[in-house]
Image (cartoon, rainbow, N blue to C red; front, side, top):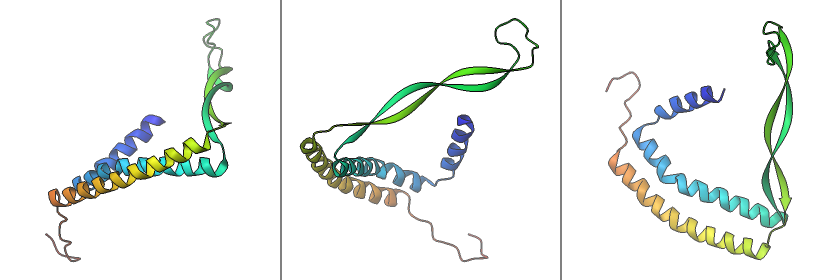
Length: 139
């Protein structure tokens, strides 16, 4: 299932123009910083953070045949598969340190925003927009 989703995403990415790809790459760091700033602001507002913790649980499923080798043509049987999940566990944080971290992220965002604006201008210069043709005419 993941392979199908990956193929669909790759096919959609192939539809992007070179300018769109350039702009997406130019804005990537800015999007990451925005996400980190949002998470830090939420942590400060809540007063605690969440830590992602993996855990294992069993999943009951149908299997074909006997996997124990006794009777390979036994038909459908029940199988117990381990499944790894992730849960969020609340943890205490130093709010003063989190506020300092937020201030640093905001300063870094301002610097990254200036760099992204220059890169976007380079993308526009490198891949100028094509003039739109009126409806019903060919280029």
